[in-house]
Image 1 (cartoon, rainbow, N blue to C red):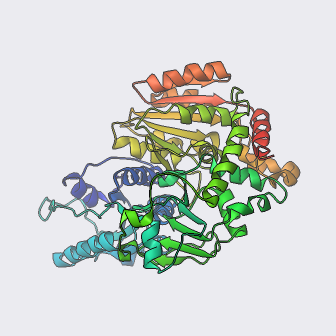
Image 2 (image 1 turned 180 degrees about the vertical axis):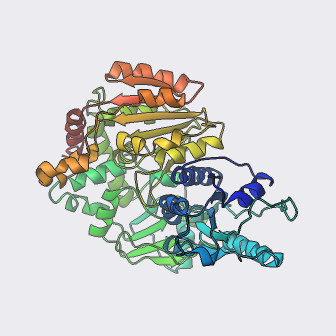
Image 3 (image 1 turned 90 degrees about the horizontal axis):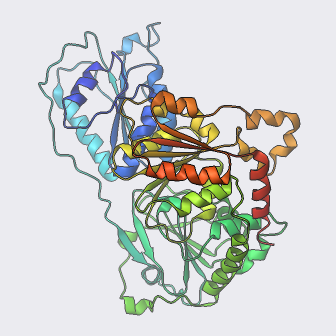
Length: 530
């Protein structure tokens, strides 16, 4: 992923004369998120290259996201020679170590080039990091002296790349218990799969275990609408106390973070007696304040399936407690009037009508929460992506563009208006992929601040949070050559969705709703638990 400049000209030449597929993105901030989308979809490291100065700083938001989401990027920043730094020279900033807090490794090449063995040794060290470290960004800062347009193909090689092993690692609850020399038979065991990481661990639960999965884990859950139920409980006075019967004795987790605020508060309030996190790494966040015990799945010996008493039937008091409570919630949740026109109901329609095998990207703020509340237990037909490493609104569209560049399947993006307009340069791409389908939820403000508790205490100052605006996307779509349809009623939305899904080119379906209708339906949803 190349952004233009003079100082990085030798790097551009080398990349263009390699076997790598190159893309040109002018805006470095967008370019880094496009690279993030490619790396997420392919699970391969993606190179980004820019010139010196503030160009390198524009990469930082995506680098931070890649660091916490554990996505491999290789950042090649061209730089001035050391003597030109702080010498009042143009496009010269202190680039060495500029990403120090959010990278897995960093290197600086020599500013003379006579000893080529130094560069080969550095390449070997980078490959070692890719093979053995937690996936994430690696920074190589490259001081380049003038003249930098004197180069040849001498020394350019296309060596076979070694990819990290993403083989699925299967492990059962029974084998974990056997390894720990514990008996889980009479224990309430809850398995939770957090955001997908580079370890690809899949836990096979036994009959008396409940499994919940974050939508970004791309694994399945045993019960429906669990996140919606937990969030609804948060909205009630002492609502979490009502869920005490769901407290686990043993919590087993994989992956990293979760979208679900309800799950975090539930497990912080009803702490498990034991929390086992499956990982081969030692960098683990304690988001449930439960002091997780780390267990490397490679150390666990499999047990015979017969020993685990697995017959596919869900049974036991703990399992029944989850099934009964979520089933009761589901009946009330389904009784809401989903024929009304608002953001939540529109998102529900999209989630239930996505084409099989399509990828779904979701921007942060309300869209990712809607989808987390709505997705049922089986999401195996669609891969779900959201930038939840840092959970910022920046770069959601660019990340979806990156995914669309490397797949023949349609890539759908559900995005809010502020996130969409913030990342307009995602569409500033001479090779914009035509399999990109954008559902733009436009309530003409940052509507989330009118949906959550707290901001209402801001008084007149609240407008600085909600940032009301009158912008629409029709002229943008025309400018960048995308198909476009605006919906402001349920009928027009249905018409527009058919146009979007049937379009052979990139398309924006702008869904305009009122803040009042969105807020009213969301309040009904929060009261679903009774």
